[in-house]
Amino acid sequence: MVFKQTMVSLFFAGLFLCSCENDLKEVERIANINAEEPVDISYGVTVIYSDSAIVKAKLISSKMIKHNIDSPFYEFPKDVLLIFYDKDKKEERRVTAKYGLYFEKKNLVELRHDVVVTMADGTIFKSEELFWDNDKRIFFNKLPLTITSPDGSILEGNFFEADENFEHRKINGARGVYNLKEGDGL
Image 1 (cartoon, helix red, strand yellow):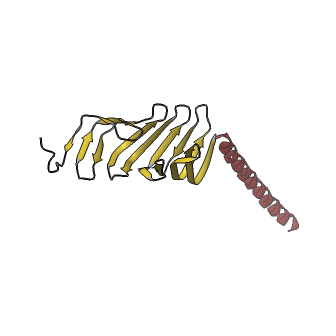
Image 2 (tube, rainbow, N blue to C red):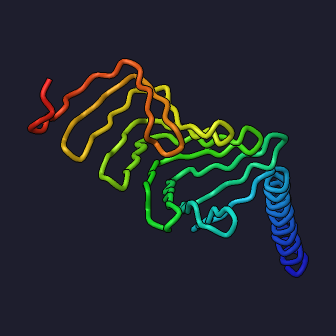
């Protein structure tokens, strides 16, 4: 009887050790995968951009992933809010998107999915993408866009380019409805 109990105990002990070894191997495998992934993940991110101690912009996102590879880039997989300020610290424009990327070496920002730019004067730009080339100091896109003015005028286009203030715009295939004010005349 004692022999039988010893055998049963040894069987369960062996089974327990084998299952621990498998669990430990699994934990080690997962740890190695995470160690090999060259990323840094941050949650609840707020980044302030300044020049000569003057705040120019603020970026807010619920999640930021920095990909530490040969051409490093930042990914904002859930949401992006960019607020730009003028020299008097007043909000000039607000940009929202559901997804964003920033490529360090290219100095390029790419925003995708429900991109909305709201200007201080009430003008609203909408598209599925928007790029900011920091070297050339221009905004551009390659997908259809809609610009709605505060007076209700609507301008649509196939793609566009604008200066860093979003003022001087070149729009390909521009079409729309313009609300004339009294005195605008043709």
